[in-house]
Amino acid sequence: MVPIVTNFAPRQWVPAAFGLIPSWAKDTKIVRSTYNARSETVGEKPSFRDAWKRGQLCIIPAEVLFEPCYETGKAVRWAIRRADGKPMGIAGLWERKLGETGQPTWSMTMLTINADNDPVFMRFHKPEDEKRSVVILPDDAWGDWLRAKSENTARALLRGFDVEGFVTEAAPR
Image (cartoon, rainbow, N blue to C red; front, side, top):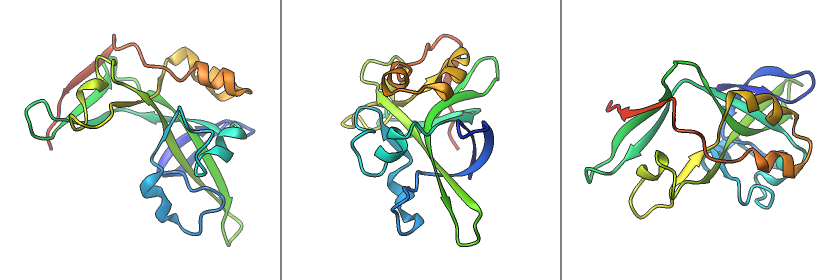
């Protein structure tokens, strides 16, 4: 479970399952394949399209991101964090289902973009894998993201982040 800030009125913090659980899913096993949503196809993929079309946007706060770096030939865990110690706001989508008890169950996914030319994220994952980055929203865009009412407005915010002010370093376990 992770905390998210939703644009569900009123705006609120809620605990959410990591990985989006679409309304049609029979069980929670689907989260293994819905941690991330590709921004290029989010409106087309069955797992994400309803949440995207309904504008169910959220922000996932994170102190640090961990990614595998293969520059040495082996996977080495690296950390990405803000130099000022403040949390990052990752662009995401949320879904909400009522459980058997009538209590809502929330879930989320992180939106990703191509990172082939990103100075930070191009270094991560296996050499033959496509390079992807989560969307780290600038601080002054958090409200814009949660208020985005059109697909065009939301898509305009799905871009790489300014690496200035971030620290990237090896962080083996």
